[in-house]
Image (cartoon, rainbow over all chains, first blue to last red; front, top):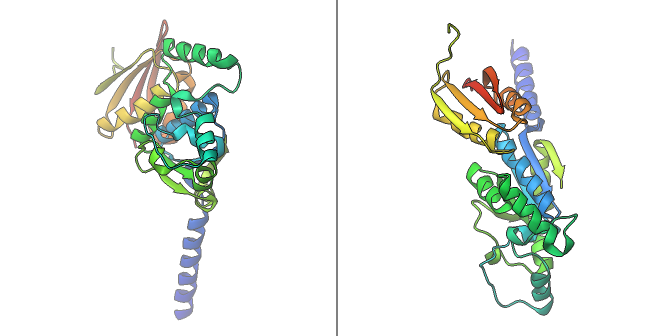
Length: 181
Length: 80
């Protein structure tokens, strides 16, 4: 009798341990690219995931980081390199360009007017929608530091957090779907 | 008609492209009780595959799909 009880308890703890290893209904996405088309796709997939009843987590790193800059925010006290990066990289979602057919900004402007005409949500609208739906956003601390971005110049996205690779891997490990965009 | 479906909420999604029809319906369905029915009207042809996929994943049920001209009408029962 005692033996059976012990075996049962052993089994229970094994099942518990297994349960922790089963990936959850979650989508983890790395947004590496800073292109308008790819950023749009990322947010469409993330908001779609929430609609499907999944959790959605986005990690912004490298060229993806400037997408989350707030156009209106200004921060001082940057060194020359940081100022240069700040100047060269798009200041927020409204300044992001297409990966193809940009043609000095003409292509992007054309695409934006076409999107408006066809009722397709803009990148800014998609970010707002993602926040409303509860898409979780993490930003790579190292990219921020490298490009000289400060936390104070990022958008006021609900629950935005700054992290490193371990946080992404923890989330990815527990996700059924992982993407790198 | 004998197979008339009782609709508890109507959602007009006309003119909205992907991903809005599915995003809006997933929000809107929370406004009705489990067992109640939403009528969703979309003009996005992608909805024809997207709504069933959404329903299967989110655990809701599509009772009927109608197609009139350019419109797609879905009767969705909240089961989750």
